[in-house]
Amino acid sequence: MKVKICGLKRTSDIEVAVDAGATAIGFVFARSPRQIRPADAPALFEAVPAGVLKVAVFREPDPVILSAVLAAGVDVVQADAMWDPGQLPVPFLPALSDGPDLAQRLAAIDGVFLIDGPKGGGSGVQPDRDRVRKIAGERRIYLAGGLTPENVADAIEYIGPWGVDVSSGVELSRGVKDPVRIRAFIRAALSAE
Image (cartoon, rainbow, N blue to C red; front, side, top):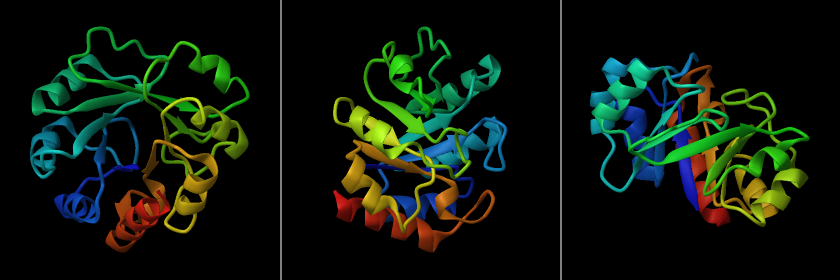
């Protein structure tokens, strides 16, 4: 089970997530309470050990910010699935919001992708479990949207995703992570596998 903890802004939170078993750390460069500046990326990226992916999260990347983030050493770029990554020098993780046309939008996507709730990243709203379960049976997905330490094991058992992604579900308040919830989320996700 791949576990991505997203929206981290402090090295102490990165250390907690890595120690608990996270396989990827998401750094948000899109407008959000979890947003970090490109100037902060090198120090935060340095706190992520080898073997744990550093994921830059955008909606549609600004070319200047994307260039700075790539230069800082990001491993994966996550952005809206409709964005054209062109000749990106690192893997691209397309992100889609759930909706009735989800299967149709997936037709143009190869490889691993992320499915979020209908309101998109950081909203805490779950996607349609039955629709996503069908897709997860055929494709490798990161499941996101509305996941918490309390419900992630059930979501994994029912949907069967390749990985899970959490942001708001491990927060004390909007944009502020809770180390206890981070550990509990990762423990629950890995035990459900």
